Image (cartoon, rainbow, N blue to C red; front, side, top):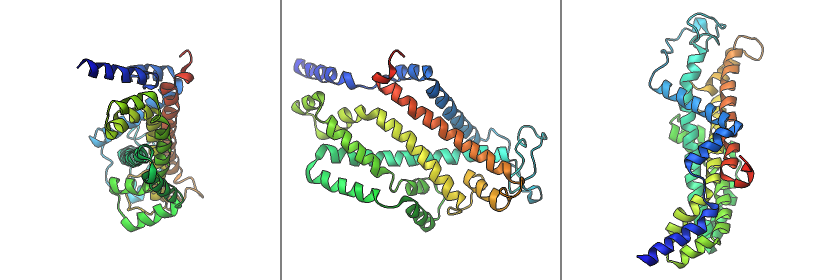
Amino acid sequence: MSRSNTMSRTITTLRKASRIESLKEAMKILVRDKQGLAGLIIVSAYVIVAILAVIGAFPPIGGQNPAAAYAPPSLKDFPWLLFGKDFLGRPLLLVTLYGTPYILEVAVLAAIISLVIGLVLGLIAGYVGGVVDTFLNFIFNVVLSIPSIPLYLILALAFHSSNPIVVAGILTVIGWAGLARSIRAFVLSLKERNFVMMARIFGFSPLKLMFSEILPMMAPYIFMNFLFGMLGGIYGLVGLYFLGILPLNANNWGVQLNLALSIGGAVFTPRGNWAVILPITAIIVLQTGLIFLASASDTIFNPALRGGK
């Protein structure tokens, strides 16, 4: 028992220099970082909006009234008509709010799928090495050489589904490969660290080494890639809906953009302008929040960047 305790203490000590910060300390740093705090507030606000939309806390969107399509802003029923109405004569603000859960759901699912595939394959390639590494690295390079946009369009047309899991899968069919190759490079470096070599000497299994010792060391990179995976998911989802490739979902931001241009004539008249401005603003603000959070993660996880913070 004494030998086991000594072994655990030795490995823990060797790992301390590279260990990630506790959640409590990370939050303190995040609060002091202006960009990080702004990002946290923005993303939290979108999550709250999505929850409120799911539980029906906002007023019902109401029935369709094509005669009032793209009606101008009004103070009537404040604040729901502040941005006018959409192509079906419904309050544009409410439509945008009710469209938030789907956007976040697909973005999070896309980020998770990409992370899981990239992490597992990258860990295996980097840790096992040899023929396995050569084969997997070849697969990564082949996948990365495939043009992403044409493939997304083909798959979206083939599946023709608005199911969040299906759409997220389409958007990550290639995105995991870059992460997997980066994780592989991380593992090749980390597996030579003292605490990993010591754990190997003490007989830790490969799975325990990969997922208990090496994986936590990559927390900053994993966190950043999760946020950037959400960014990519938002871009791809809105883009596919804007192009009219996925099935119509009237509460979707991409659909609103598409119809504001094709029906509302937003390019030539001011009629559908707000139906373009509001969804684009919602997308830009959300992406800005994610970028701010990703930027702050460097400060949270990298002691050299914190300085005197």
